[in-house]
Length: 237
Image: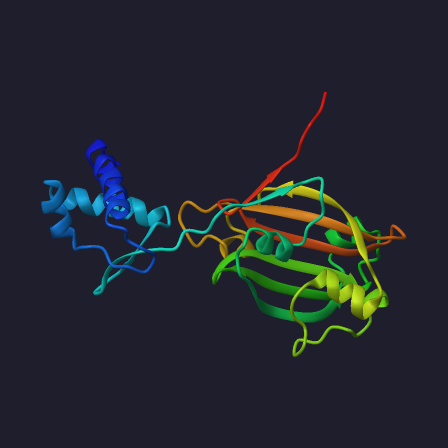
């Protein structure tokens, strides 16, 4: 991006603030902005492209350029166990989900190793995307031994908190987890679901969850957008 385009980008952001433009409002045309800032349309187009890549503008061909809604960051301390839904709601955002599937299959090798199970162990697999104010922010895949959770999961009725479901329907209370924070490969299809903006990167939490008897009852892959979720931990010397 050229210095001139960067300057125009900043001026467009300032113009949006000064004119009280709100999410969903349409911006003037490129030619109008070029006249306003006394630059060529190519410079304006480059600045708009950068703002689009940052997720601040939405360009709909044939209709125009619109201001998008910016989601706030969702902070979480790594020394406390919060569900994805809890983190979304605590930030004052509206939580929703898209259920991908609930199936029964044999235990994958990595899950079997982490949960100390046989690869032949039957598992309930729950996969779903998590939304905040209508925008996808996380994707989770959860593995639970059938011998522990039984047949309490049904695609037609399951919704809401997995922790609450386990406590209310199965009598299992999740009290802790061992969490590994990693960066998934860019080719990971689950990671790609979250790359809704070019600047979006994805973090992966691999988590083994325990109940009050220290049984390993749930293993999860939680993919989260790091432009939305921030994790921190206090370290002492």
